[in-house]
Length: 284
Image: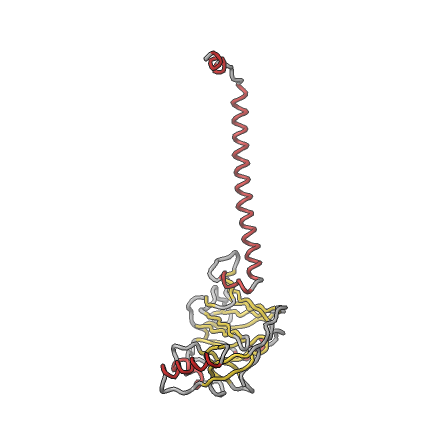
């Protein structure tokens, strides 16, 4: 007890309180600095991750609904976006390896957001199907001409649909081309960026259901309504002819099974047959 009493009676220097206060203040400042570093490091890491994802198409889909910094709304390979509008005027602008699709109300005032749109990716051949709703002023010839300026684009063609307030066109890509689609706001526009991929997929035979070749028009577009349960796309064949296509199968037996199903569901329709062609080419 004598030792404890002696310890309790040790006089405390007056400066010690100030020293302890300053030490605690420095500790709090150091902690705040550490927290700031952690926050900034996380932000930098997120930005780096964003740049990496944008440049790796195989994971671009994962960013589909993730908001990012700046005027970018989303980055994707396929999907949908924008907001419902009407009467949009559409123009395109070409850069070295990309094309921008701009929207305005009257050809002068740029829209803040992109009209509602959908992009579908299909193979055999590799192509992107753009559908933009609420667009009434659209120069297909100019859009086609601009897109064909890109060296990695094989062809561009219009698809007629039964909706006078929507537009649809197909961008057929060359072999070994990968892409990203970026939606921007303020102003609202879409940007399609293309680049070559060193790893080419080996061409292989595919089987699908298709119609006879015919001119693009209402006879083809009506098929989407006649077969509402099917994912129908339209492919340019030889010359200026087109065919409606359902599915993409590895074997003829799979395609024949699908044809049987379609025939059962629509017994009065006999528009499709089984055909085959190489994955990097068009049907004949």
